[in-house]
Image 1 (cartoon, rainbow, N blue to C red):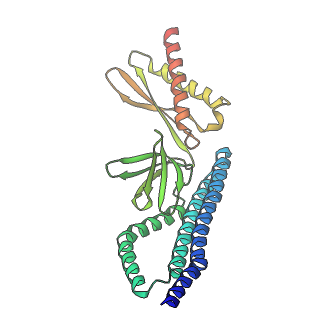
Image 2 (cartoon, rainbow, N blue to C red):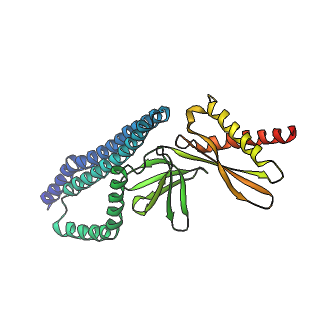
Image 3 (cartoon, rainbow, N blue to C red):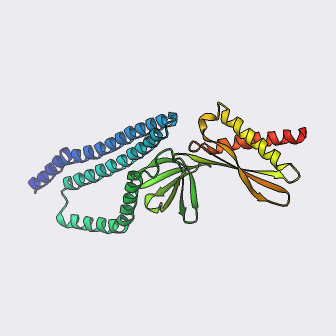
Length: 282
């Protein structure tokens, strides 16, 4: 009896000296390795963002955005592999009986059966998003519709194989499963449309107003501060609408991606000042 107790104690002590140490090292190594991968990937993504923001070449900036998205997807894939391998090693080292392994496998299979379909769909959608270069980190996008939330508009902060994270203009961070992204609008691709509608009172000379607006647009096209932002100088395209009190004049042009709002705000300010000066002079 005493011999059996000592033998059992020796086995427990031997297990703690060998298998337990291996289990602890496996879990610790998996944690450290996953954190290291997250750090390296985060550093690379941040570096790509900084280089892309400093580039004026649209093709290079687009490549940088998708490279950052690829880093995010690679990080997710590596972390998933590390967790799977570490879990398998721990289960093997625990030396569980076959009946227990069958039970654990059944429970895990049932759980994966409910969740795997959506996860696989998200991963496949993520592969398509990255491979087709639909958008990348740093792009301004509009995605949705997302149930009661509707359309979400903002800057892409992270793209993995499973989710896309979008920072809205209000500062909210929205995480969206890739499988839900049925439609997306990339507003950072190639160029953006500059559109401004100017109401001109019907009592004002419309021809004089159009000439003044075109002159303001031409001056803005020659301004060193805005020339690099414009790919096509805005001009009056015509009369958009006639109301009881105003003529609505439409102005159109092109700018670099995501710069149209800055151009439009400055253009409205200059036109308002010019038309007010013109009216007071007349």
